[in-house]
Length: 88
Image 1 (spheres, rainbow, N blue to C red):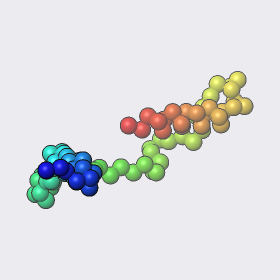
Image 2: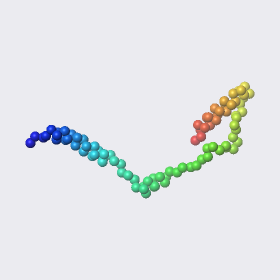
Image 3: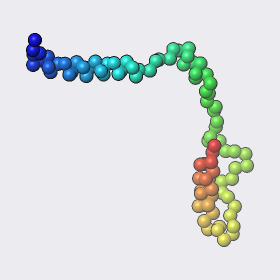
Image 4: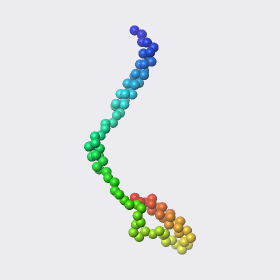
């Protein structure tokens, strides 16, 4: 019994579709329940830290050597930039 032309074209498409569905089922991750998600999330928390407040003893312009007095603003800005990168 010869296979029709139409069947020859449909067989590869059906096999490819079946493989895609089978692989999709195999790689699907199981979902967490709401209770499991809450239990996992309970280990983590956020701490609120004020970052726009002026700390005690803060200086707006750093004292520099007398020879560098003409660029003291630049030195203060560079020092502040380094301090900001070292926040935590």
